[in-house]
Length: 268
Image (tube, rainbow, N blue to C red; front, side, top):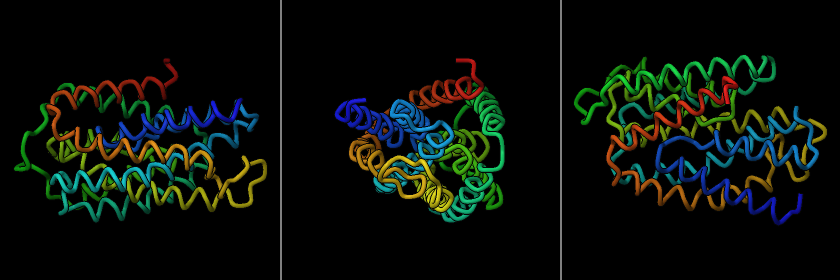
């Protein structure tokens, strides 16, 4: 593949990742990972190496992108500060554990389980009315901690920030209004992505056959060009989010979660 085309595709991928991060409060790994995976395959990188490199580099991009996105959501008052620390701490631990577990389990099994979780979450999102204020937000530290741990595990196992499953749980189970769920998810993904990133760097440190300019499983070239556009777009998208009707955001989440679910199950 021509190097210029390679860079252009990375920049375009970063735009989509940043849009999803800022607008919907998810890391964007569901876009960033497959783009990198197929680009690496086209360059002759072995599939068994291309997948963890895609996971790890996505997490590096997500970490930087979410720093920008979360700052805007925090300024807009959409981060639940009472429980964000426990979500972030356990999310960090879960992500590290998930990354190490991923080297010992069949990834296809994880994809199927994740796909089923997405479909179930989407059904609940359709059937259940989202809260429209902060009055009924759960005060359970245990529930928030478990959410952070689960999101972190998914982050480490599948190279996603965890927001794709975090937002449905925040809204359906913990009774968050849509905008606050998006902002809180964005902030928590900072530590889930960081935990997974550190683990993948360690796991890939002495691996042979990695693409040029890699730090562990993180490919520096892909990280730089994806991050340039992702970070710029994420900041603008976070501000657009507060102006959009929550019902529209809910519909966008449902469509995205269903798509990821059927994709993971191999239906499309």
